[in-house]
Image 1 (cartoon, rainbow, N blue to C red):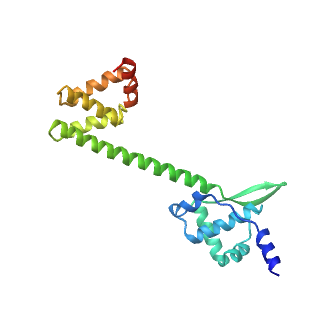
Image 2: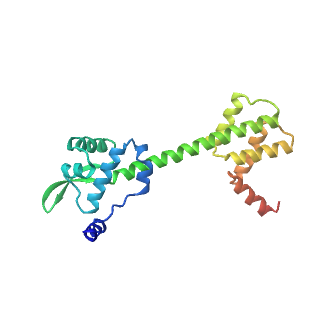
Image 3: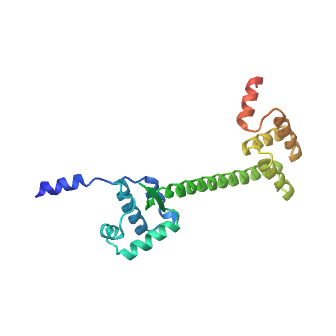
Amino acid sequence: MEDELFNEFVESGSTSINNLVLQNYHNLGMTEKDLIVYLALSMYAQKGVTFPMAKDLAKDTGMDEASIYTIIQGLIKLGVIELKTIMDHHQQRDIYSLTPIYHRIKNLLQQEQESNQQNRLMSETEELFRKIEVEFGRPLSPIEQEQIHQWIDDDHYSVELIDLALREAVLNQAYSLKYMDRILISWEKSNIKTAEQLQDRRKKLGY
């Protein structure tokens, strides 16, 4: 009897689920019950059953059929799964597509990455303002702050390159953004817009 149970356990198989689903389901607006139903749908899909019956899902999850229907509708609204009608041997049949969740996660991660980049840029810009104010010995005016934003947003100079322009200005005891602007323009004429490009240029020139 014990051997039969062990064999049944082994032969029942396993369900594979991407770790990103487990790590981000809550960020997609899914609840724990939503995840359990999604996992059950994944289990059936990996067995080749793309449209399992609600009664089977209810039996596997311990939920009632009404809850299963409600959760599935919720997953469709969240864009996590999609109900599709396909042609199979000249007959129409419904299937649950489970791939939309990966598109949602991809968009979520891209938004998170863009947000982190934006926050990092804001932090670097604020630090740049602070450095310039320390070197100039006075607060920056709103017009000067706008000029720096223009260098970053419109001219696409890196914060690090602007910082190097500040060092050049300080070495020459020229405490003005106009002087820094002339430095940046001269570098741009040499196709330099990043600190790395400036370093490469200086290496080629031998200094």
